[in-house]
Length: 432
Image 1 (cartoon, rainbow, N blue to C red):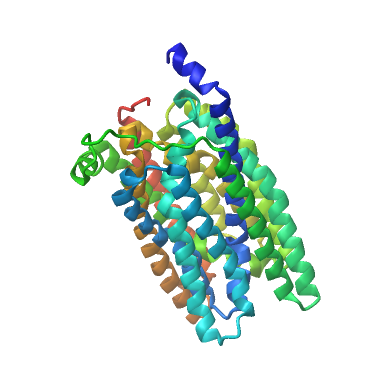
Image 2: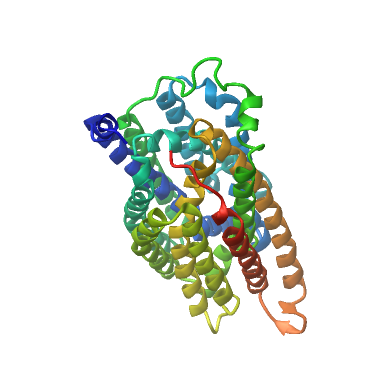
């Protein structure tokens, strides 16, 4: 990197943009916490959804990745990144907030249930329409050689501050539930999301705008050119398969663990303490994983994270009301795994695809993997129903559906580790 580029990355505008992007991701993460896992399961259970239905709806995020395919057709037509990002991102946050207002609508459950699904889909549509655009925009102010460390630092800020947010909501919901006023807890959650949405908007406004198209007119702007540089790229296809394996391995079970966690630990504050323990573990290991990745490759960082995930899922196989501590161990290990996989599986696209096609490549990768992830969630739902219908008995052994799904997930993670080690990690990488 020459001195001119160094001066550019050290300029005031670039430093401000990097800091603003870190905090934008933090406020976005707060919203994700408020509409994810145990909190969403609490809302869905209140509205009358079954465990299987809750698991499938919780995993709609994987199907929603299909919305990124739309961005493939429009990303190169965006001439004002900031305006488009703010518009779609803000709309998505507001629809997430509206989820907690549905219990107050004067409609029957038969109407409220479809409304939940509609709100989730619209929210994720707005989010994923611009997620790769915002990611590329925010990371354009980061030195490519320091990208792993920057991502790790960004995660640590989100995770540590997220501890306060999730504990606060868990405490509030418990207090409202204890006074037979769970609706008050939903209002608290909606108000929190609104505040985070406003803070998110402020951070996006502080990021330096990108008003010029990344590719000159007539140069690589056709869909044919995009697909030639993505789906016709053998190395990129291996990354797509890795993403499919990763999403399938976890979504076969993860959408059903929110209700299981609430079943094993009825107190929402206890549930959030467990969640926070995982977040703290991820924060502690984010920097080490970032340094490990920079010394090696994104693929090696992912591989190490997958090994931790496999161990965690194996432990979760033994989680029952009598051995609930196994789910705590799983939660901690799974979050440590995310320190190695989450950022790297996004950044790895830079290693095999020209950066001019990063947004389109990410959208294609996430959409295909999301569709597969949702497909295995539907299979998981069928398995859950079958186990429950059989009195939680599997081959004559008393076992909850989540335990069986964890065993299946463990086998899938082992396959993913082998693929990462023997295929993806062997490929030549690009530095850009």
